[in-house]
Image (cartoon, rainbow, N blue to C red; front, side, top):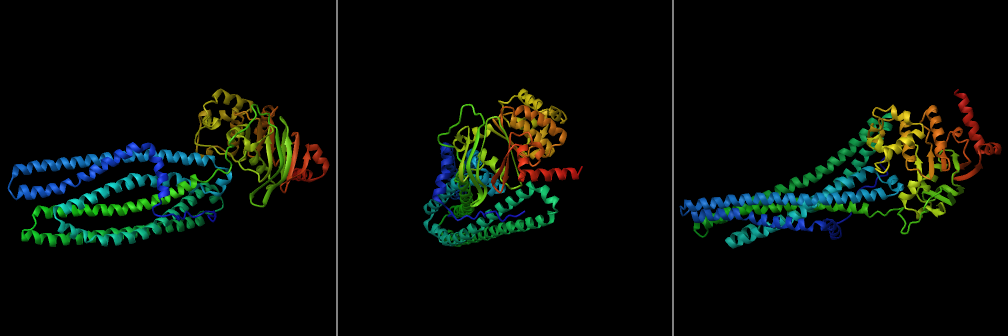
Length: 595
C-alpha cells in the first residue's frame, strides 16, 4: 500500500494568524453571552486569588504580632470564604467554557461533514480518508482547546499577573523591583522555547496525519493485505511511521521538559533574592514580616501564570495549525456544485443523450473520446467492451459523479449540470458492482434511513424481484443487523440488497454495472425475470462482461479505446464480424472449455 500520493500536512502559516482567529471567532458569535459570562467569572476568580496572600500579611502583622486571637479567627474565616469562592468560580468557569466549546465543536463538525458530502468523487479519489477523519475529529478538538483552555484563560492569567504586580508595588516597591529584575530571563527563555516548540508541533501534526491515513488505508484493505501476505511489510512501514511520529512527540516533549525547569530555576532564583533582600530589611526593621511572607506567596502565584502562558502558546500553535487545515478543507470548492438556477422536467421520461463527450481523469489522458449516442425512454441499451474501455466512466458522467471536459450530456433535453445533484441521482438509479452497506438493520439499509419509504413498499419491491426468499433466510429478516460495510453478508447478498434499494426509489433510468456478477445462476434467473417486469417502460443501461445476459437488449454499444466502435442488436453485431463477434466467440469457447 503506497502512501506516495499523500500530501504532507505541512503548515506554513504564522503562530498567530489574525485572519484565522477572526474566522474562528465567527463560530463563537452565537455564544457571545456565554463567553462574556465566562470571561467575567474568570476575571473575578483571578482577583479572588489575590486575596489569600494579602490576608496572610494582615494576619501576621496585625493579629499574630499583636496577639489578637479573636481577630485572627475572623481573618481565618475570611480566608476560608475566599477559598470556597475561588473553588466555585473556577468550577463555573470550566463548566461555561466547556459548554461553549462543545456547542462550537458540534457546529463545526456538522459544517465539515456537510461540506465533505457535497464533494465530487474525484475529490475522494485523491484525498486519503484518514486525513478527512483527522480534520473532523482531532483538529476540531484542538480548536476547542484553544478557547476552553487557551484564549479565554490567557485573559485570566494576564489579570493575575497585572494584579500581583500592582499589589507588590503597593506593598513595597523596592521588593517588587527585585522580583521584576528577573523578568528578562523569563522573556528570553520563552522566546527560545516558542521558536523550537513551533517547529516541533508542526512535525507532530504532519506525522500524525500521515500515520492516520496509512492506518485507515490498511484497515480498509485488510483483506487484500492478508491475501497477498503483506502483513510483515506493512507492519514494518507502519512501525517506521509510528517511530517517526514518536520521535516528533519526544522532540516537542524535550523542549517542554527543558523550558519548564528553566522557569522553576528562575522562579527559585527570584525567591532567593526576595528572601535575601527582604529578610535583611525585616531584620533592619524596615519591612514587616507579614509583607515578606505575602511577597513569597505572591511570587509563587506570579510564576504560575508565566508557566501557564507558555503552555497556552503550545495550544495556540496547535490550534492555528489545526484551524488552517480545517479552513483549507472548508475552502476547497465544490468541483461539481448545484446550478444557481436548476432546471428539471416535472415528470422525467428517461431520454438520455451524449453529444461529443470527452472525459479524462488526468489531463490529456482521455478515457472517453467523442462519445455520441442517445437512449430513448423505455429503451434498454447495453455497454460492452474490454476492461478500461470507459463503460463505468459513462455512468459516472450520467449521474454527475464526474463532469466531462468537452461535450454535453442531456436527460430529457436538459443538460445534467443544470439539474440539482440529488434530483438527478434520484432519477438515475445505479446498481454498482461493489455494494457498500452501512451499520444498521437491513430495513434501514434498504430505505437508506428515509422514513417516507414504508415497509410495505419494501416488501412489494422485494417480492416483485422474487427476492422475498432471500430475506426470509436471514436470521431476523428485515430486522437483521448489518455489520460495518456489510461484512456479515456475502458479495452476492449485498448485490441483492442493492437491487432492492435502487428500485425502491422508482428511478426513470436504471443502470446495472455488472450488477449480477456475484450472484449464482439460479438467483440471477429470478432477478432477470423481476427486472424484465420492472424495466418495462423504464430506460435501462446495462454494463456487462457476460454477453449472454444482454442478448435481449434493444441495442448494444461496443466501446473500444474510449470510442463507440459498433452499435446494434445482438444478432446484427454478430453478423458484422467485428469486435462484438470476437468477444462473443471467446466467451463461448471459454464456457465450452470448462463444461
